[in-house]
Length: 169
Image (cartoon, rainbow, N blue to C red; front, side):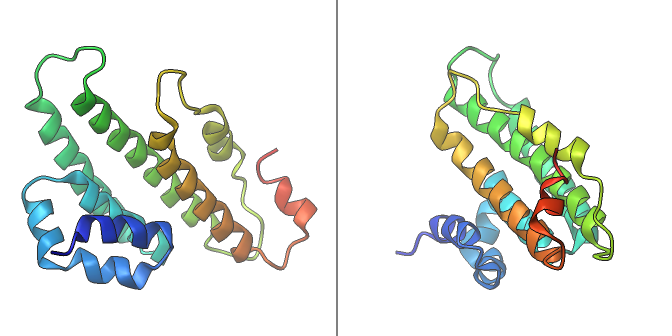
């Protein structure tokens, strides 16, 4: 049997957006989203950000948020160390990062002048893992941030590297 969820995860990490789009329409992923799995919808949202479909990002982001909130309301009272709560909190964090990524892409759309990304990138700089969080949880976030930095850099390839460095200083 084929694990579409793992293939989808690998595809977005490898920035294979064609494969992400193909997998998002596969029966296994569609069934997982219909069953309320927010991770699959989040991957679809990442693809929309990467493709620059910023109108779709808002809609997919809202759908992903609703799936997470729906799951959250059925959880028992929050207790320290609950892995289910931690997983959903991680999804919420990813959704915040995706929304900010969409804002970065909007700022970078013109391509003629360097945008002012200092506030957004400073938020990323100061949003770091807590001591009790596993780094594996942050791997997804750091991987996505790396993708976004590469997208900004390639969008402004005509600019001097030292000038690009000022986007976040």
